[in-house]
Length: 114
Length: 113
Image (cartoon, rainbow over all chains, first blue to last red):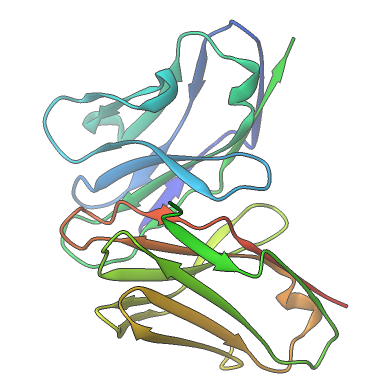
């Protein structure tokens, strides 16, 4: 079955430390890949996306993600976390065979400590 | 300019009532969605319309009825509200030629008492 797994329910990092949020997907072929962020009380906002080409993609707010086909992973990284990055992060995939359905992971809650 | 807007932002109502949530997008997108987010933040697709046609209809009680009067609007009507309907409902839109990159509204927090 098609699925998206975010293994970490929540992560706590110190301000200024680096961050990596994990995402694995299960599909027959490489889907389109996304990371969204949801700040408290807000809707989701797109951070970055991967369709094809360079496997390291840059996004907004200093985030980047790397697509690794061999590991079916699309991990999100940031070299130095700011307190304002505290939020819920969702990995999402869309099958590249057409269709409109986006599959979201369960989310990872990021806490940032001073 | 607000890209995807929803009204109301908060909705508190009694069990058994009927209520509606409205969504509008000014991005020129051809596809719109309704999602339900539960208390654990799990995001579940409910419905999707492409050019006013229903294209995704997940396993949702038939008390929920979406309506898309035009490509820029998608409404959600809920009949006979139940306690389990309490959640945050998000509207989103996308362009079908942009790989489903979605733009979300701010959400409507529905509380059923």
